[in-house]
Length: 145
Image (cartoon, rainbow, N blue to C red; front, side):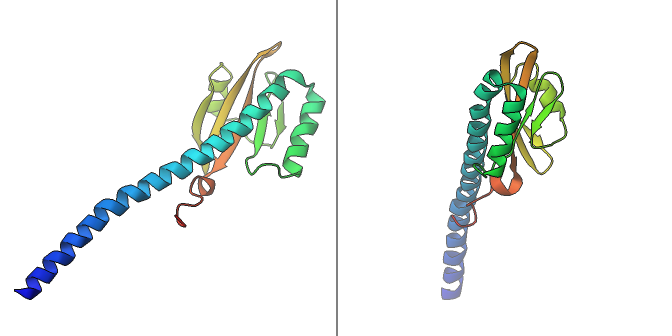
């Protein structure tokens, strides 16, 4: 009888712990991903005014300085309306084409996510500022928490 009671208490305790820890783990993972996407969005949004105000060579120099100084852990690329790519050299994804129509979006990319901000109001059309977050950055701090 005692053995069955101990087994019942152990099983109940295990179920209560699982019912608490699994949602907690999922919540921590979502919070970490939201934080990383928010950081990438801020990085991309900080470049949009530069796209609208700087000439092409100054913008290219500014993006090179940002990546060289390691100001951010988030790589930033600018796709200009004429097809020129400034900043980190990445392949143009279909999501960039969608963003060039004036929509700012977050899309799944190989190995992570990309945040695409449309820079409207340029004389030649719409530029797209892309920041990228790797899957590893999306999970930073989850294990420790």
